[in-house]
Length: 134
Image 1 (cartoon, one colour):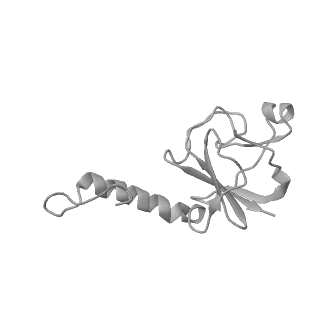
Image 2: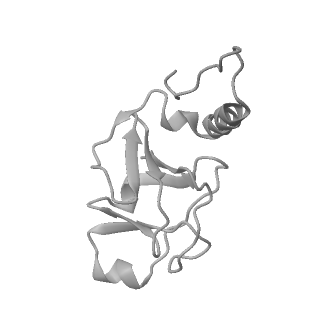
């Protein structure tokens, strides 16, 4: 019921609802660590999405494509031993771009193959980036 899914008059779950539930289940298989055991982060909600956190990790939930890398104000890359996409574990390398020199109090995280382009998110619903604390 929390997902607004219920049976029809004959007691069957509609095909469309099954597709949605399957999609949510597939996403949870890859990204459940960003939900279970996490709470509100010390990082405020961002224009591109939301942030969850547990004792060892910060999870960035990126909902909207950005122009260039996503930005986090007041965060230092030195505070993290690894930044990666949660779904597949691929490491995200923080490379300098034209923005990094102009805004030294921001950390910029690219979602594409380099640090200066604009790209579609890997997961159009919620791309999760895990930042593992030192």
